[in-house]
Amino acid sequence: GSASSQSMRKFSCVTLSTKQLNIQNLVSYEKQQVPTDAIMFITTKGIKICVCANQRWVQTAIKRIDGRRAAK
Image (cartoon, rainbow, N blue to C red; front, side):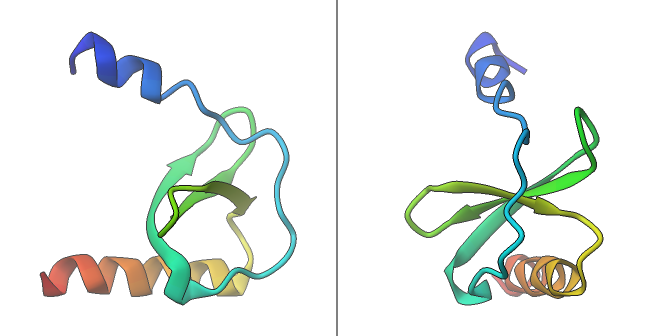
């Protein structure tokens, strides 16, 4: 990776949102283990929202995003 991509990785999940997000609005995600086990979703507007990884809807959202990526 280049130096520019390193600075992007600095965003880490500190506070987790507990509310369910609209899967339609999610375009991407990143898994994080540090400092807490979380999924960082990126919305169509480019907003990063961290959620607890073990919620059922989160797993559904991940599968949906993966499916969309595979379809392209």
